[in-house]
Each structure stands twice: as C-alpha cells, then as structure tokens.
Length: 283
Image (cartoon, rainbow, N blue to C red; front, side, top):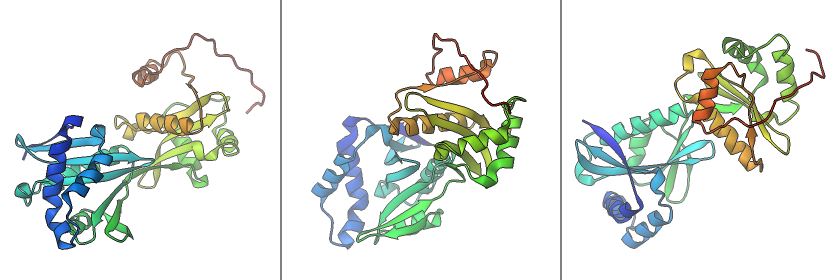
C-alpha cells in the first residue's frame, strides 16, 4: 500500500464535506442526529486548508485527515475514510503517520469520537486513552513519547551533562548558578524536552519587557536531526509572542558556523550591532 498525504486547498471544501457526510452517516443515523446541512456548516466553520490533507492510496483518493496545533498539543480534528475504502488498514496507516509527526514535535495528540461510533474501539486499539466524556462525544489522549515541559529541580545533573556534551559550558559560567538564577525569573520559560524521563534538549527563554532572549539551546547528540532545536525555537517564539515581546535576540559565537546556519534557516538575520558585556558577579 502506497499512502501519500496531499495538501488541501480552499476549493476542496465541498468534496471534503461530501466525504465527511458519507463517512458519518451510519453513526449519526444510529443516534438520530444525521443532518447533512448541519454537518456541512460545522465543518465549514472550522475548515483550515493549511491543516487539512487528502489521503491518497495507490493513486486513489480515499479520505482526508485534519491535525491542528492547539497550544502544546495536537488535535486530530478529523479522520475520515470513504466507506468503500474502509477495512483495508488505511486508518491505521494514517494514524501511524500522524503519530510519527506528533512524536517528532514532542506533542501529545487529542481526538474526539461520537459515543456510539465504531471509531471509539479504533482509537482505543491504537493507544488512545479516554480522558473525558461529554453528552455526545468521548475525548481521548495519546501522550507523546517525548514531551516539552518546564525544568524541574531533579533535572539539574542531567541538564548540566547535556550542556557539557553540547559544548555550551564555559569556565566563567557556573551552570549550577545559571540554573539557580533562571529559577528566580520566569522559571516556566526554562524548557526541557524529555524522552523516556531523560532530558534530551533545553532552552532557557526570557523576556525583559523590551526584548526576548534564548540561552542554553541544546540538543543531545543522540537526538539531533529530529527537529528538536527547531521545535524549541518555535515554542520560544510562541511563548514570547503571547507575552507581547516584539523581538527575539540571540547571541552566537562568530566561529560557530553550524549554529549560525541553523538560525539563518529559521529566518534570523545578523543585526548591525556590537555585543558588549561586563561581568558583575564572578562565578
């Protein structure tokens, strides 16, 4: 089976609505809530082509999937397979692809299902746990194998080892003191990516009321080339934007060509300034 995701456009709305109605007809009829007009209205109200992808299998269009970012989580908002294409393992293959994307972003995945729908067994079979029940729907959660969270006190040794392995520590900066200082100011912005309970990436973010800063962006060698640095920078930008920060500043050693190239790919450009500093407390 050759499964491909193809991005949707605004022109696809009616075709997607027709597929959704066909896929949901039986479940909604079972509870007396089948209303094609209402189904179209609800889908159209939340339709976001940028998060919507067609599912093509062996050059045949068989369904679509919608995954939306909601804060530090992903929402599997829609997953529909045309009735004639069901029973071929396509839904499981789509979930595997979505799970891989969620894990690469270190984000949990949520989904909802009609209480009377067969999809409840499908989601439970694939590792979702029901966390809430509303009048008509069950709500499920699949935690990520990796997760982004704020620093905890028991992370200290592992985080310092991570920084040392990444070559970030210097004799004039005591990492223990740097951590203690950060915990006095916006500690929630000291982020850690955890994999199996072990910190594998960090970012120390701050906002002084004028500019945002990121320090100690580090990724363990074992977890590089997975997009974790990009993920942490996106989370830094999101958190700073929420706080009204107009600009994020960075300091990178001029000799570190690899890191400079990383930030350039993210859209950061060199400012026409000279960085100055004066040590106030000797570590």
